[in-house]
Length: 499
Image 1: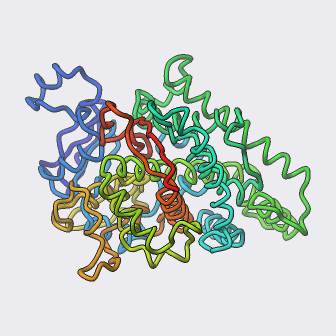
Image 2: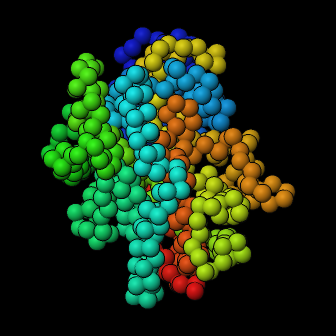
Image 3: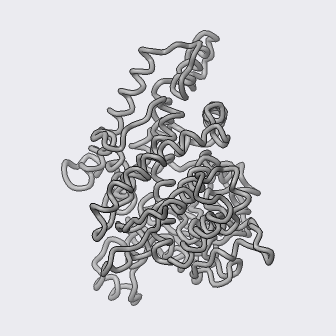
């Protein structure tokens, strides 16, 4: 059936979808008690019973891979499956690459930065500058490897120290991993590293992860329907404001220190390069004013948050799958021992010689998809797509989870099977439908950095240690915790040195 949004005239020829509730749209299933949901709809499992990516994939069985939902009166079109996602984001990139004005995101980002800023000339200029600058500081290059390995050395030293003390209860790897990952992007963009026991930095990383989760997976999402809820002085609304305030204070202190010590002839990092660009813009009398200290703040926030949370969760997922599948862990370690040995640490130059290890990383990424619903896109002009009319301003949700669990392109997609990325000769084979970093104009800018970090961290940890769950402790649920990213449920691992 076709959808009719609350308090709006019928929209002709939009994609099919479920009938919306008054005022809240299709969001209503998440707002009523379970017993009332069953009585009103006759459906036993309400949407909240499964994670949003899984629920949206299930809806595709009813309405097709292209369907409509309403959040309040706002039209949302969901893209499921590789063919639909690729056609929209790559073949129609000019109209599918904008970002929607979602209240909670607009409040937190002011629609500036790289990740959430609207598509257009200012965004393209900012993104090009950031990408070029980060490359000059090693993004995607072997010159960045020592920076990543420096963080790994800290992790390995700490694990050796903690392994005996927590031999039975296990070690929570999250603080060590997140600190090492964040320090890589901090080195390039902020020009400094932080010790893993730095209390302010540790608190900031914890708040950042918590803020991402509550902004998507708590009553805070109601801000998108009733924006004034953001200012309530209690509950998750107060927590969200506290997270925003703490991150703001931290980053602005760093920018101020850079501004006061800037040497335009010797820029130290991305912040310095940006400040130099600002001076050049002012000297040239450019009127667009796109390079401002305010914009810099949101760019640094994007890099800091996106460069930490996604890769940290990917590494944590890798370790979790290795303790759940010890036979795969053993096979990875055998390959590393055979190719690299024990006398030197793995390097990026070993990447082409470790196909099963690479396939394992890719399979964990496929199974978990740390940004399963990407970042919402928006249609910048009314367009005809696959026989339907999608109006200008429609929010587009690319369900990357569905791409990686699509049974039409993946054999037994819910089974963990690294060999699916190997050919008959055991060589790595890439698949077009493997897009954990997204696709199109908004593809993740840090893709190359993330791939470097994942490979080096995984191979170095697998070479040095054996990981297992504590005795008698059940495996954590594998559905994870859904926020803006998909994080594994909390777990600890017992660590044994292999040397």
